[in-house]
Length: 268
Image (cartoon, rainbow, N blue to C red; front, side):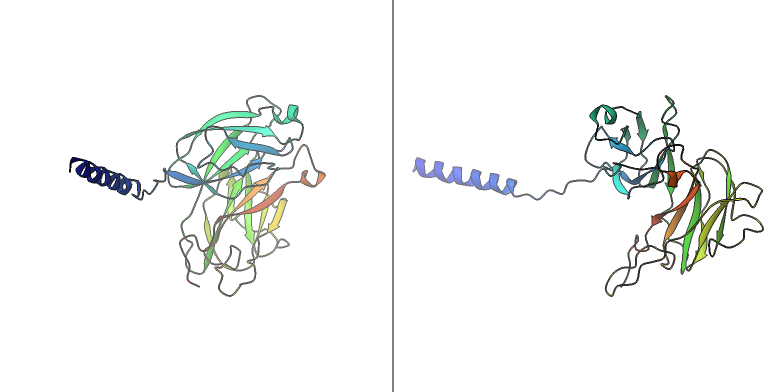
């Protein structure tokens, strides 16, 4: 009888332990922000940008990032984060050179761009500039547009219908300082282009038409583009490169998507 009771007790304890093992746990997601990298380093080739404090919740897309190029947004844990920048190379001696080793504090619950800027050839000059990107939905039937000045001098920007349009009157974005962003403006969906000038003049330094929305596919959510209401753009102005491809030696404007039309949900 005693043996029987011991067996029953063992079965009960084992069943209880099994029930404990079967409990479903939901891992908690740490506070984070959505982050992308954009390179404004004009005096070198491509770079590799790497979080070196942890792999989880880190944007790992910043490899072989060329001048004027950017990554997609990825969730990054919000806290003090350590980042290193290396030259992109197949030569281990070259790619192991640390161009920048820094710690940045990632805020909570934002969408941000980490703009890598400064001359890489001068010690202590390379740095990240954190730019907050707006995720608020544009007004109904509109897109939002702003400019970000990734060059070393002030510029003005004109939002026009096409790159050949004359720049007249007051600039849409006037006298935007180096490494700073304008406010967003709303614009009805449709063709648009950005033309950048020297402040106080009509001397055009760079022009670029915005990206059209891809053709709609039945059953798919709308994609970002000039014809997709709810899209938000930042148009970056970059100065000419001092190294690398000859095609980069002139100033340029580049359109980046800050917000997709369905970021807050869509109905097909």
